[in-house]
Image (cartoon, rainbow, N blue to C red):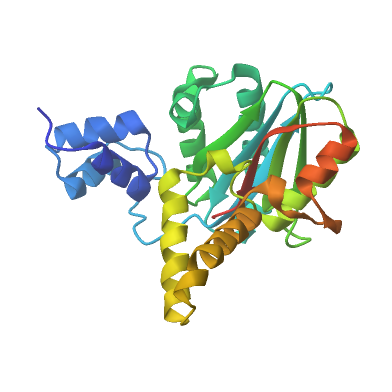
Length: 278
């Protein structure tokens, strides 16, 4: 049995940008020796294979593709090393091509996407590896979102005019409402909520917030009789900061996002927010 783990395969891919199966085969041949596996990949002529340790893909672009009837949509982040590559037409074209592939094939997750055939027998992973070799940088595809069960809209935000969008939001409403969808997506882009509702928050996260709130209150010398009320107040503050429906609406802080949705007569079913490198 080969003496390596999935983590070793991941590490080799990060070091070389080679495909998953190529990395597995190289590690098998190298009997788990990472440095030897890198050498094997280079000897076998893998395009663009070089040691990339210490190089991070913290730049890139977020792209979106929405169906004409807003019945489905895709949000995808593609990362690279420098803003020079990120703002190039070739890099953005790669991201757009993969987003179109996601829309057409509806992969179950990132692993299924990378293993799927995008053109002429070439997998998405191989397509990304080819872009890596062509553009001369580490190119990383590790997340996407796809909604197909409601009214779907997207908002893309440029943090710099000479770069592609660095923040992207995908929202899904239960019925058509272009203006509300746009308003809520822009709000999510600006305020970065983590959850849709309180029910989505793991119990251990809430318990940790309670522990921190109580410890902080005791450190501040708050009276014992007031601790429960103070802790509840601070946990509610956590909800208002992290749950989108409870956040104060960006365009009218006197209303919550839930209130805006209620007034429009629509429901926010789900959302995804990507910021490049975060």
